Image (cartoon, rainbow, N blue to C red; front, side, top):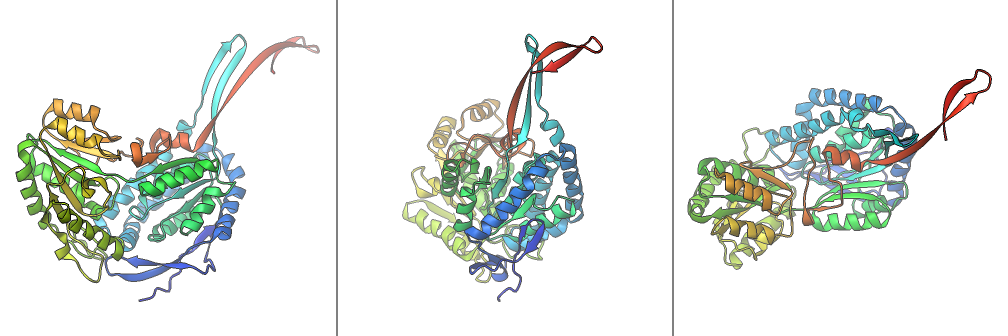
Length: 498
């Protein structure tokens, strides 16, 4: 079916359709139906959106941080009011289960709550009498028009990693959501306007590489935040910085889950499965490699296959009784399924083949387990971004740590153990920026930075937490020397600065 709904852009406080020659289909992954058409804006159309944001920047940047925070307090109430409706939009355009969509809305809401405290986080430092009659102070200023280029896998949460902090720091913000999931972005814009955000402070532009290239080149853009694959993250970082932008670019991952022989196996299996198959494996913190240490390997693989086979896979739109939904597109499903052929060709054992669960109408594939994967195989080196869990066997903890050192990524990793020494060694030495100990997905909450390492992140200041505030502001230091003079009419001392 062909959708009649045309996704609008948001410019200068007004939603409008774009008379662009190019459009893309927006699908419901559960059914394969087209539910909307999204414009792919060209460079000129993109520049108009940025210019409108630039026009709003000066007034918003001088607005009291207290007033900016109050917008977030109102936004928080609106998100809570529309919580289930927002989750429904995410499920319809992405395909994740309603439980997963509700969790995504909650994590986005936490970023709004974090940003409500922005007056405290923007406070500077002072030191009186730093040198004789000289006082020193630092203050934070908005960095300027900021851009967010966000992925399809979290259409509400990832934009909210950026928008609340950027806006409350005094910046106008332009969101370029994934053209695969533009509907959640539209709802974010509607809620921000209802919360009283001035026109032009938040804008939405849709597009592909042409649109992104214009955002990276436009002279009025000061900062760019990106989440996506490593190859594109690297390109965004290199192009943006070459054009004088401040850039934070989060890339892909290959996350390891270490299961020690002393781990509670029943709990570990459930946690590993939740990590690998949550959101159908389409998240940068998904567990991708289970490292079975020592004697636990055979039991782990058997229990993983038994547990994963019980998960209900199916359409999620209007269906609460599903454990795992579809992948985002048919071609992505075929790409993910192709890794099982690659695994067999390289000598690994496909012990659970989810391809038998495929529904020809939706973009479905079931959980997969591949045993006896070697670190040099493609399944161990490449980001699959689907429900394929590779099992690598390691003789001991030292060998498991060595597997991590070989990985070019460095997003997250977890260990399952009751041994304090093993947990401490893992925490200290595993090659990843986010560590979990008996935690399935070690993704930090809003108050802590999302600290990917190596090829999982390009930049200096990470998304979320205090680093997010630092990214969206720049410091100014003022030194003041005070002189004492005499008012000749009253002969009273008057302090003056110079």
